[in-house]
Amino acid sequence: MCPSDEFEFFFEKEWSDGLPVIPPTEEKVSRMLSSIKDSPEEIVGEFPPAFSSVSIYSIALHAVMAGCKPDYMNLLIASVRAILKEKFNLNGLQATLSPAAPFLLVNGNCSKKIGLNGGLGCFGPGFRANATIGRAIRLMMMNLGSGIPGISTMSTFSSSSRYTFCIAENETESPWEPLSVTLGFSEKENIVTAIAAEGPITVWDDMSNEPFSLLRSIADSMSHLGSMNICGDTDQIIVFSPQQAKICSDAGLSKEKVKEILLEKAGRSMSEIRNTGRYTVSRIKSWSIDADPEDDNFFVPSVKNPDRLFIIVAGGIPGPMSAVMNGWNGTSRAVSEKFCS
Image (cartoon, rainbow, N blue to C red; front, side, top):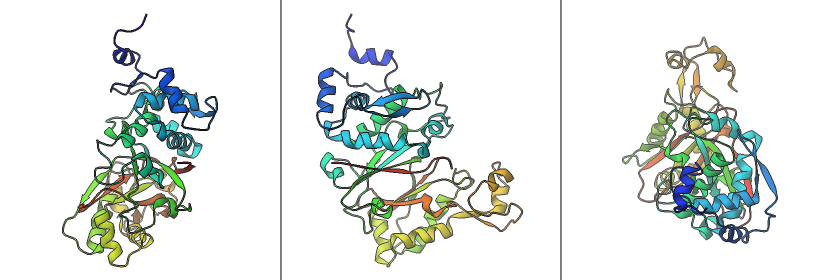
């Protein structure tokens, strides 16, 4: 018997993220698959914690459900490959108490072709590619991985970034090289980088016209005592608006120099950490730095490994602000994948 309301049918089956999904008819799925060269039967990996196999066909099916266009498929497949890599540790991310989610950053000409926004309002509503690509990932995490809230996903608060978390880098208005080039790829390549991260925390500064006061504020936000980073050994992302990146660039600071300053300034003393409930000697011994738990004056950097600090440019103009995105866990590492436009 055909359901009288196909949208209610999907809600009843718990195949939804709480929003209506597009019914994945064979015609719609076939149209999605027609945009790529991959075989529908190809297995990309397994989604934890249920470890159900994910095929190209199942990616196309969820792309339809999320509202994607066929043009998004190559990026979506690359994104799935990235988060299923062992080093990303999606299994842990699915079960964590944290609100963190897979953050997808896209570099390359593909962004313009498919309308993926990295400019004004990029983390918010109004942009189909941003909304539906990230949403397709979440639907697969739920339907193929059984990442169901309250059952296998135990995030205390969760976050709106768990609906969708995908942007382009604003390469056009950035004074610096894109993240993909920093990571060793060519400017001509389309790259998606997946990083387990929490949502952006705004660092507002509408008065600084030179970089050092600006970077001081960002460094402070990077190292607040309740963050995962200050007591962990995790990734961290700094999102500069074009306006604030230009303040640094106009003063002669390269992205690498800005990173160096932030690594030096963002942190807390051991005595400050000792006075929190998160202080344990075993946790300190697990860091990738040689820290002395007994030295009150020891400087604990927010990012212990320089390779785990990622600086990107996004958002629009005007924009007297930047953002800090805290990492999730030391067991998760960023993963980048190439894809064809």
